[in-house]
Length: 421
DNA sequence: TCTGGGGTCCTAGGACCC
DNA sequence: TCTGGGGTCCTAGGACCC
Image (tube, rainbow, N blue to C red):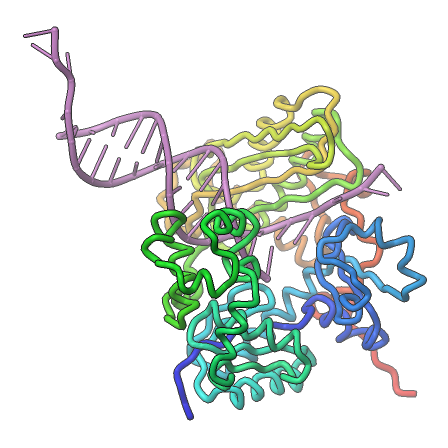
């Protein structure tokens, strides 16, 4: 009865489930969570899916008819989702010694015990956290993804599908009747190229010559072919020692057209990037500042400037200075920029790198960064700003989040209050 | 009027070396 | 006159993920 297998456990409409946890009125109603700037839909409840709300749909297109359909929107509250994600992953991890946290709401685990073990996880997550999850079980990650998708699509499975329990011939039929585009790791471009070789269904791909696929496409797709055959060849990965890059980027609520305002944006974003570096205990050697026009507009411009920093650093002053000097002079006049970002790369753990002493002794810079951190931790984000980032009121380009819920689990002043009737 | 943000991996091609 | 070839490293860009 006990086979070594891989399970994909993921939360159903995770962001919506997080919102429902603290607002039970949202249960049973069509709910969507919007991207930053209240731009487009990034999570939908089952009821919202039934209404036909597509993933990625811009909110301004839905807003007009939302009331009529009883559709409820929430701004994304990543502080809340991030915190609940950590708790969810911890709960899932109790069921296996072998866990890969794949995304904010998904985890691959090694799992023996088939569907019964899957149901135990589903019930545990429900009982301990109140978050509904689905479990797909198979002999490879790619197939576990499919099993999970199937469990979600068919309520009869009650959230758990183990391919090993499928009747003979069932999987063949499933693969033959589904397009490659629904496979993990295959999207539009690859689907179109595959069609050129006469490969349309998942079964076509599974039965293709994987050495040929390797030559025509890549090792990645060749692995997918073997995974479809049930061969477990994309290994479960442990937590990474350090990440490769860290990005802070945001769209503006109103476009920016002049270098001066962009310098202000750069000051705020670079300071935020520095703060994230410190939170992760990392220092960076390269910083890239970029901005871009809307993909939907006629005039396209995407300036990007990479700056090699004198030393590995997480110093907010240094990053702000580099970013404000680099990007604003590169703007094209009279152009409407709608987003910008700071990317830091060449990351290493703080303290692992021998430092060259810059002009201000390192010890003093470190104290400043740490002090800023302490002030923000105590008085909240945005309390302190360097130079142009020192704004008393939010700038007119700042992110729009009109339907934001409280940070229930991460800020004392937002703690939910329960009253006995 | 208004269309997200944060990541990873792979590959091709150039620079450079001997 | 005739002007190599194999290897590594780095980076930009493509494709994909949630």
